[in-house]
Image (cartoon, rainbow over all chains, first blue to last red; front, side, top):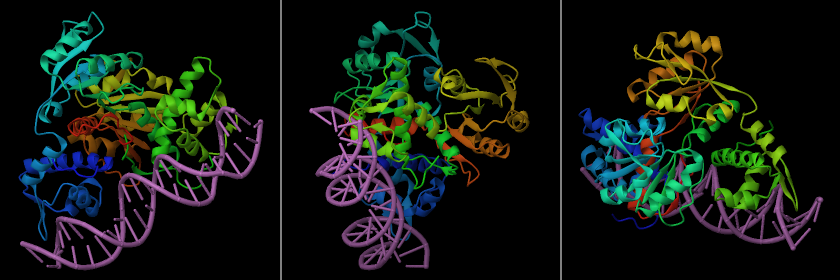
Length: 218
Length: 218
DNA sequence: CGTTGTGAAATGATTCACAGCT
DNA sequence: AGCTGTGAATCATTTCACAACG
């Protein structure tokens, strides 16, 4: 993985979108695509796409475009999707359940390897094919199964402690759904999904009369 | 709402975090805060916070900091949280249910005013205190109840059609959970929560050995 | 020709540095 | 002394413009 200067965050985000679109088109039997066509599908400019890809070498053919097979393979490799990521879901409430049963999850190279919940009534039950473990077993189960990523879907108050325990057990990355900043120092990577911040920003956009998609962030 | 030049997207995102932190401290009885203290809590610099706030006038007191009461009031006003936003949830699967029963939702000025699902077995049932309506009734119910925001928690394939129907019914903003770009032209505002893109970016961060929080986007 | 790849220019956002208020 | 508000400088990202290629 030759990544000399550091790749812009926004580029990484778009790479995930390229891969998704490319894979969809592969399934439909398409074999090539130009940066212009891909851009139209995703609401981006052709230049942006070529610039993003140029960070990782040259995969296109001038006058033709990109072949989908090598492109998707390279994107998977860049994004670390050429392996299976074992994840632990902590918090088996409605959100945790929604995440576990999210269809694309498994197909996209992520495996729910363990599920934990603090509620004694949940422990032992099965949700979406996964047996729920007690929080007390978190350390041992996470280590035993070689879990690398943790999904934090617990209430705000419990999030930091869950993060600490996951990291102590050897987890390298956390996906945080709680509305707090997790303090992890340099012990792990953190990404957040902040549902209510997003909703608030939507309300702002509407108030301000801004129309169209305004993602980019978060 | 005096907003002359256009406010940076990242600023708006941070404003939602400021408001959240300020409100928490208000509940704890605190009455003032400096940009430095707020920054420390949120992992941001003091300068950044002052610059963000400066887009909306001057609320601070040199030598003292910011008074929490006027600050939170002004932030709510800026973000459009000085009113109740009626929302419709379309798709009452596990994700839709998780959203509806999300505690902070109501407290934060958003009201679930209607819920719809395409599955006939769901229609008529109650989830988290909300009666599920048939998709056929979407247009009439949304209009009747004056719904302004739509939450799209349906499978990818159905998302665009749901978006179109919500917009036709008068909805001004969409919060999209499906992994597609919704095409809305200038008929509405869209914000997306892209769970799998986030997870993929987390995997990338871990592969690349990048530590610490890396949000910002999405 | 249509399309890629990429330096150079333009735009956007953050950080610096400091004047000014309490 | 402690802190805000802000223009100027820096840094990051996007867009432009165009040479090179099939």
